[in-house]
Length: 229
Image (cartoon, rainbow, N blue to C red; front, top):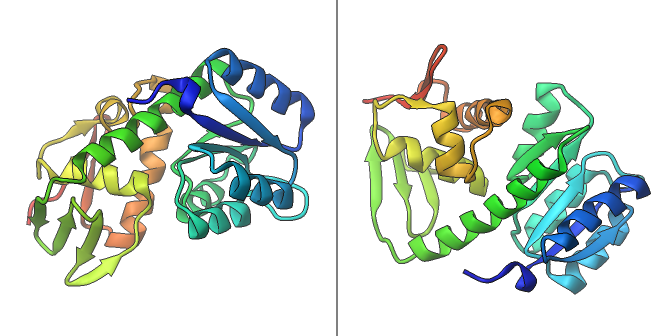
């Protein structure tokens, strides 16, 4: 795996105090960090710097974070960690729907932010290593092409984000098995924080919106399972 020194992070944050603090911490981790303060500046920096990960504020002057994320993903898919002061589930699901891979709610821990950036990079590396795998998973009406990272329901392709795909594949690998939220965080996101299990819940809700409510079942107090046909 490439070293952190070879990884470039674009931080898009209009609060200069937060931007400087995030940059300082990521630079201390060995990353090459660029900063943008608004949406237009972010898109220009994205095109020029070609970052490996984007840390993106949800609320920005001019173009908001959702539109910035949408345009970035359309130009060149990149892992996006979205920062938000909004706690409403609808806002979180919209962010995931435009291509964000993960999110953190302000105020946040710098230690956790660094852990999530590292986890996103590990997932990209793991996905590239699995690209040679030509396995196709078929469970009921759902077909998952792990080589091309495509998902079909009753023959129609469904567009998933990188994180949604990885979560679905993990659940579908063992239909019927109940995965604890902490286990899914470790397997899919690459870290396990009890306080971050809401991330799993939000992504499961996003999957249900796209695939149907009957694909993933909730085991209350435990976690989730892919429903056997």
